[in-house]
Amino acid sequence: MSERDPPTRRSRAPRGHGWRDAGDAASLLRNIGALLKLSPAERAKLLGALDDKQCDELFYDWSLWARDDQRPPPGDWIYWLILAGRGAGKTRAGAEAVREWVKDFAIVNLIGATHDDVRDVMVLGESGLMAVCPRGERPRYARAAGRLAWPNGATSLLFSAEEPNRLRALAARLDRMLGV
View 1 (tube, rainbow, N blue to C red):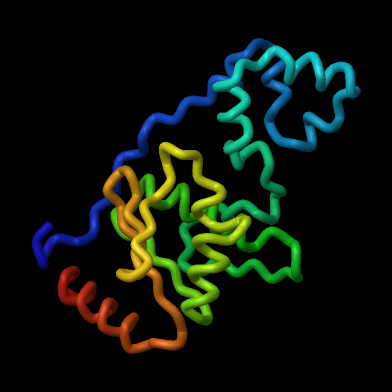
View 2: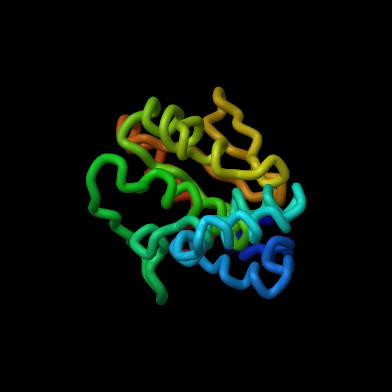
């Protein structure tokens, strides 16, 4: 990509949902609420019919586990605010959104209050990117460079409010690239 070319959208990689092909009963697995409405015996039968690969896919399929308020809003928007208290799933929702965005965009950056927040919560935390991505989608974390390198070639730079000039320099560079 030259300095004049805008960042490109990446084509979405095909993603298997083999657990959804496990039969008619598996069509009930649209979200965790539908699964919980089944009787314990029906749940056990449904889940028992899945093979190991399907179970792994089920575990990492955010469309099953997410609550409606954890999903990005529909439409064309720039800012998404999740106004919620501790334990509401804000970090997980953000990590899952980033996980989807890197399939479509070459650059998806992370910005937090402090470097420690970005590293310890957004990247390495129990609901951070390294925890929510299956092994084949997990980025390589370059701590010293403050960067995530995704398997599909996308990149995430890590920023904090502690160094606002670092982010301003990137914005100026992108403005030049886009001809703004």
